[in-house]
Image 1 (cartoon, rainbow, N blue to C red):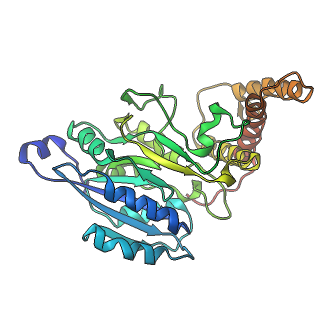
Image 2: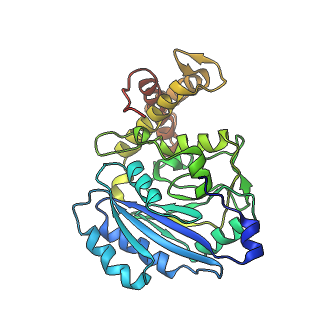
Image 3: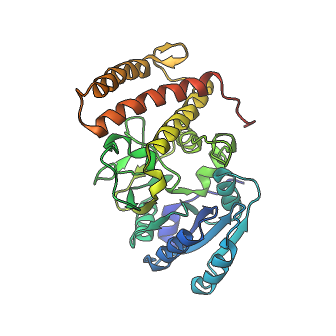
Length: 329
């Protein structure tokens, strides 16, 4: 039976809105403690009941002990789930299946919610006719960002800022819904199905397409979603992610994921060699900038590196479209 979330009914009857927050985690006991502290500190408005479920995805550290140590502080609202199938998508799916609330919130184990995060959730879904919301991911830097970090490649480190206004998610939206800061109704999950493990990252498979796939499915069924500037989380950026090697690897595998998705659902654009022609043009222009930078004619290190990353984007897409062998979906 489809679980229907009806905000108008909730408003009339005064029933309590149920939110389940799911946190997939793997070997991050110290960061997980900060995540749980932030959830405890956030304000819970009247009319909203919150439960938190931590999904341990084969951690070798003291993750279970950390969660059990917090249970008394959450007064019965904190649950521990173990998921042996490796990968963030499998952990998310296990957490969603283990909960029953009207709403499902998802954050990562290296994030902290802002004090008003619950209040934003309550206000957004009390308005009715909303299937999902997302919001800003503000970086909490582990070190000072190097000068070569490109501002227009913020997705690499999960830095999301779509402005200070509430705007709808649609085909004109410049970004997409990211699973590290998202709240969906259980009804819409039941309609579109779970995350695809075949598109998610594991220790051996570096794909990153599960959020894009979920977002595309939401739009295809006509789900109504909004970017909320007040749904804020703070995302820890460790020093090892502020390296050129990490940026290159992320861009390659992110676009390999897009190439894999493009096999199943091509976009309505011109293609050349199975690759969108605009991507080839972008890479060609980037190549010229890389050459100029190498010759000393381009002195902005961030712009030079952004041009190089465009080549990694193209290489990743081509690999994902033509050569990557996916798991069964």
